[in-house]
Image (cartoon, rainbow, N blue to C red; front, side, top):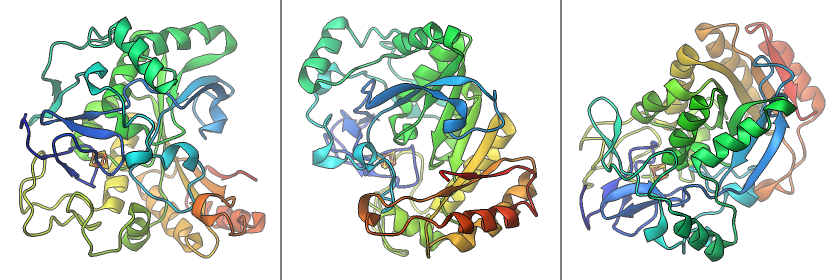
Length: 360
Ligand code: SF4
C-alpha cells in the first residue's frame, strides 16, 4: 500500500496510474489510501432473470434461466456500444463518484507473486465492512439498489424453482468491479449455483487466474482482430499512450514510473493479445463462447480470421456473429444487413462446428 501516492491498477491493460483520491479510465476504480479498489461495490444498474441463450450462451445448460446483474462503467470506449446508458458512465458523470467512500468495502486486493489476497481481515461475503448503516447511506445517497454478495446468492437460490442456475455478470463490463465480482462468484458457488461472466475479456493474466476457478461459463467478446481496431475502441490511436501510460501494443512509455504488477520497462500484453490470452486460458478452465458484433464497413473482414484462430484452440468453441443496431456514437449508421451475417457465418463454419447469428 502506498499511502498518498499514485498507484497502478493491476486489473486491465490500461494499467492506469491513479493518484490518491483519483479514478481510473473505467470511471469506477479509485485510489483510496494507496489501495486501488472498485467504487461501485454492490451498486447495481439492472437485474433480471434471463434465458441463458440471451447472454448469449447456446451450448451451456440449454433452456435454463440465469439471474443477470450489471453495474456501471467500462474499460473500453466502443463508439457502437449497445449499452452506453450504463457502460459509458464514467468520470464526473458516474453516479457513484460522489459516494461517501468511507462506506465502501475496504477490499484491498494486493498483487502478490502467486495470487490476489485480502490485505484486510475486515471483509467476508456477508462483509462486516458493509454494515446495515453503510448500505442505508449508499441507498440514500444514490437512490440505487445495493446488492451484496450474500444477498445476491440468496436471490439466485430463490429463483431456482423458476429454472435459475446461478448468476450472470453482464450488461456493463463486470471485470472492472473485480472485487465485487470475485466475492459474488464465491458466494454463488458456495450456494451450489453457477457463475457466468459476459465480458470484453480485457483482464490481465494474474487477476484472471484468481477469478477463473469460480467461473463456470463465459461469453467473451472478440471485437476485432487487429491492434488498430482495439486501439480505436480503447479511445486512443496506436502509438499514443493510454491514461495509464501504456500503448495498445503494451509498451510502457519512457518517463513513467509504473507501479503494481508491471515493472518499469517491462511490456504488458497488448489489448488484442490480452483478450486472446483470456480466451485461451478461460477455455482450459470453463465453458466459453465467443461473440463478434459486426459493424458495417469496419470489421466484417475480421470474422474469418477470428474463426480460424478459434478453431486452432478448439473447433468446438461456439462462435456468435451478431448484428449491430445504430446506437451511441453510431446512432446514424445502418444496421448490419442480415445477409452479411449469414454469409460470414457460412464462412466461419468452414472452421468451427457451432456458429450462430445473433440479433437477427
Ligand atoms: S481502466 Fe483498467 S487499469 Fe484503469 S482503473 Fe479501470 S480496471 Fe484499472
